[in-house]
Length: 470
Ligand code: HEM
Image (cartoon, rainbow, N blue to C red):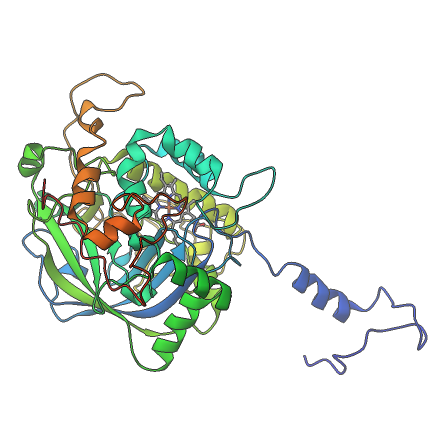
């Protein structure tokens, strides 16, 4: 029904009062009052785009996941980049890790690769995540700084957490001052498993590599950009897509067996460690192109719900204790953020393949389920959804480790310093100087060494190559 007047409230006399019976005014204001939803507890500030993933090399030997076996097939994706610490309205350019989350809408359901632009993480165990995030977010009494890690509570936590050494060096390097979101790498961070039809498992690490190369700004440039344009990265991504200069990444994998992993001089289940490319080379298996800006920021970029537990048959998680905690956290937080158990029915979250289950009712149920059967086992309805041992998702039959139950860290997680050293020695001299160590420069956020304040610094030569001068 169209309204006859969208300019004036219903009033008793020309000069008021406004009448309670004005249901049109009340409905309009009520809806407006409820326009906001809670922002993400981390990664609140983000920008996203639609696109596709095209497989160029089959992983058929290792996995049944069709996404990774049908060469030439294009799988639609929705990719969201984010900062971690700031609120949804914070600036785009602080020194911060960038989230790199990809939702693949595969024929077999959604697979979410929820990664960062740094290949390791600050902590080894999910138990520490709330402490880490509390320490880096604005301090609770003064409510600043917003979106920046340069403050006492963060350094207090980091200085008392030796396992953060590797990540903090990446975080203080040029990596956290990207020149463009189109020029960042992405990493799945944890080891995942690929499973073949017989259930044989191969470990896999995922890497996104930008076609434009990795480029960063220096600190002074980041400050100027921050002052000039709060939306610098969002605008850059939007404008490049609108101009047809579609950002592109290669997807590469590192594949290794359980036996190979046992011979590594570190534990690959420890998320503060990389698997150096000199031990396990990268194999490029496909490319991702982002070619369409969302129609609506709220409906898509804000409501998208990534979750490391969104897997398809043939891909599984590993025992990495950080990843194991994440498997719980995302669904839990999204129940609150998106208001109930049916958020997977929001168009941006819905699989693009047919799906069915016996989940019913709840807030904002959008589906009209038909028939009497909403349970299993059942015999009354032929087309009722059922588990399928042949094509359904299966877990790897991982034999239990030796040892007793307890709150503990394995001894294999104890070396916090070899890889940070490797990272540092693998940097070029200007990069070391930017880190605030090489040139003897020490500023809170890692200042620029003399002679390095040139225009864009197309540096970041290192990646996960590691070991170079070890
Ligand atoms: C135990 C450790 C972690 C926990 C408990 C955790 C928890 C969370 C939570 C609650 C959110 C907000 C989700 C939402 O509201 O939709 C989030 C977002 C995110 N997390 Fe984590 N996280 C952890 C570690 C990590 C790690 C290691 C990575 C990278 C590998 C990561 C990458 C991301 C990304 C990219 C997002 C933003 C997703 C988006 O764009 O919507 N997180 N995380």
